[in-house]
Length: 118
Length: 516
Image (cartoon, rainbow over all chains, first blue to last red):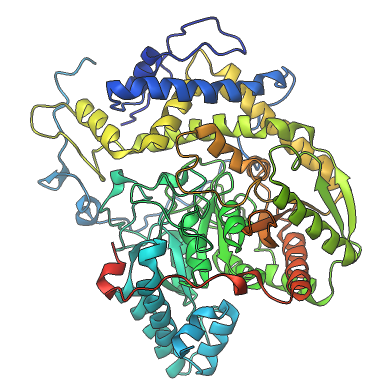
């Protein structure tokens, strides 16, 4: 289960391009929702201000990122690495469940998942 | 000075020798350091957990092996070590300094931990850090800040402030750090200790709690270059459990240090990076750096100036790439299988519990970076932010390739400023991020880089560090220069930097209180 669906669109609040739009408290609330983070109402303005300063500083990358430059995703070139498909010892069920917030009948017990929006 | 105090002042090399010759038992060595932790860590707060029982058992095993006539498990057998609390150790609490992992007991050992145990290195406990290693001051720890042993009102750097402080406080002669944008090197610089970030993939990431997977790299921290090299060889090497681990032999860095100390560095080309100095750097730090350059020249190195024009954009690229990877990695803390769970009262859904748990469990900096990363990766802004940052990473790698055409190693000050006051920059994220100005380029390029003490900055009387960078898998050149420089600086000054640190306040803390 991923708490951060990164493909969802962030609502733009202004024109796109290299100049980022000002980050509003509504933007922070939306980002917090996407990242499944509870952020208190009284903290929204402070985060908006801080994220705005940071985004303004980091937007400089667009100035030199010409179309013909290949992106680097990793420091060293990566190739697929495979291992032999052999059985190896893993955690026992008891070890896997030992640190669970809640367990029941040899399984992780989770809060209700039915009745949600999706 | 009692025998115990003597033992805590010794280098790892000296301690290993003492254990091997029977001059001191491993249990005596471990006990001396545990007692030192009990006496000073109330003031320093380098440790989040002290594993007295486990450490003494490991030490006893070293002594038993020696008594049975077995050769030492490694050149560091019986030497104590402080482990950054982002590296998992089976059965010992690991928090990453986050409330979301409070009380979590890992069911397995990191590869580093396994290698340390197999080498007979005695793990004393887990050290403080910025939450999930994001920060430059250790103030982002959910369990309170660590003091810099040079001045307890100042930061010990970050994120590995606990590991660096443990060394400078003589609580341990060795420590493990992890470096994503400077978290080994910057704490080393501001505490007057040595820290090395290996080539990306040089040390296994299996069992490291991930912050930014394309940048994270664990490495050795110590009080001397030789001790760091010995620890480097103990933890490095290919690991089939980490698919980004490099399938190459471990560079012979111990031999490289001895070569630097014995044969020197005459004829080596050392490049001073134009862009890593000047504006934003404290005058005392620059003076210390200039003195280091003069010392290297006096050793017969050829000093050249190299230009890396895109380093100007490194900080910006880093603070897009790192939060992006961080937001993805920290998505695993979802309150379902381990860690904190808040609001599970039968009325709230899994999603509501997840939101509440992450809100309660993550600190302010973690939330900032998760939201930044979510923003940078989102469909409307991906190209302008994350995509551009990845292109800048290419440009920085090209700058390094050009520079290493003209020089064997590159040098700069490790940090722009010496240790600042606790609380001074905590509400100003950009001011905090600027501490990583000089360390980030090597992180983005995945090359090895280390920090060696370059003396006290004249304007603050606090330690400054010399950063030495080498091409990928070029650790030997880096350690050779570090070994020669350390020896020359100590000889010229007449003392090692840490010899001049003031005594810490000691308290007769009961042993149990040293643990959290």
